[in-house]
Amino acid sequence: MRIEVTRDVFKLAEVFTISRGSRTEAKVLTVRLHAGGLTGWGECVPYARYGETLESVTAEIEALPGDITRAALYDLLPAGAARNAVDCALWDLEAKQAGKRVWQLAGLAQPGPEITAYTLSLASPAEMQAQAAKHAHRPLLKIKLGTPDDMPRLEAVRAGAPKSTIIVDANEGWSAAVYADLAPHLQRLGVALVEQPLPAGEDDALIGLDRPVPVCADESAHDRASLPKLKGKYDVVNIKLDKTGGLTEALALRDAARAEGYDVMVGCMVGSSLAMAPATLVAQGAKIVDLDGPLLLAEDRDEPLIFDKAGVHPPVAGLWG
Image (cartoon, rainbow, N blue to C red; front, side):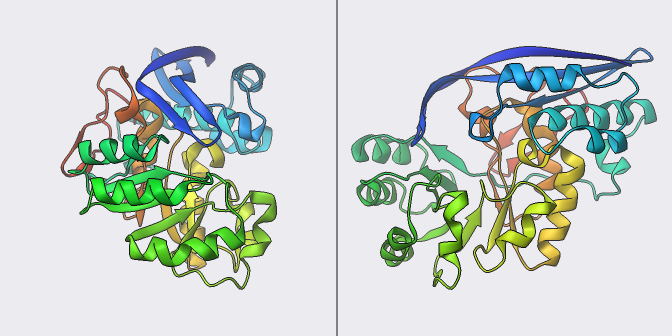
């Protein structure tokens, strides 16, 4: 088997801003595994927050042996972007070799569409109200917060989209005191969930804290090894394939999290339809689905995922799986 890694850049439809900064394009790595005239592929988005770069992740992938298997992969690479792209490419290749779909190989029920959140970029309250009004037809909106002026922005979004369910991502930008202070207002404005309000290394402050609005672990939750540290702090676990290191661990984490009483959210980095395709399998029946990466792009893969009133649809075989 030959492993090929390429860098791809997808322009965003508009500038995308969170509390950590702004971007105008999505830079991803595409992995192709060539074997017996067939090619399986996957995509990952290296994330600086976890010490990853395009260069470091490429080096990890290129160092793998040509006879890599999914079982061996988990002994050679840690959870993260590199393992994710290779794991998903292996699933795709195995499906093509077997003449089946990945959901069949994984023993899953045939997947269907799931309603996904649409993320509003961080901006002034007036700009965010205009964004919200433009997307008020969407049933679920996600707001990036984590600034000193969060409440005016949240009020503005609610005014712009009075009927949409709202979830909030604080991107580690709050403290326990800020969450406690904002919680009644979040309830009043119909916020359904708050994602990672505290820095991952300081989230012990959530223990014993009243959580009238459910709190979701994102940066604090990577794979099944993360679960013991979440107890008493979180109500929901956000599963992202670039954190779990692939579809294999993502499915295992989903089952383990549910077994321990957590609700599940399935999220994404800003990537193409190829990155979201495996995640649609994990997203089946999730409490919150946030796979809107392709909706933020000005360009996408061939045979991209379909988004309509029913939500994000599973991939066609020509894309992945």
